[in-house]
Length: 60
Image (cartoon, rainbow, N blue to C red):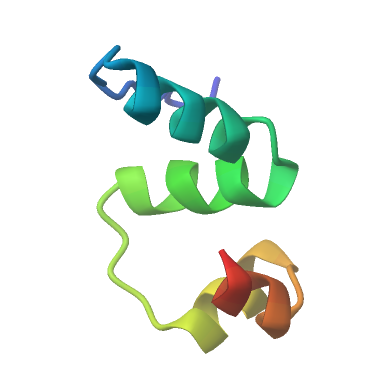
């Protein structure tokens, strides 16, 4: 079973709206989950590991 990642966030309206936009995006969730598990990486390695186009990683 994969380890689940949890993040404590502010529910302040502006921050909550921004977070909702981010976590509604599949690529963003993959990146956040990967980085939340203590992976220190470059954008290029992140794109390769997660099979996400590098321009997508850069735009996020």
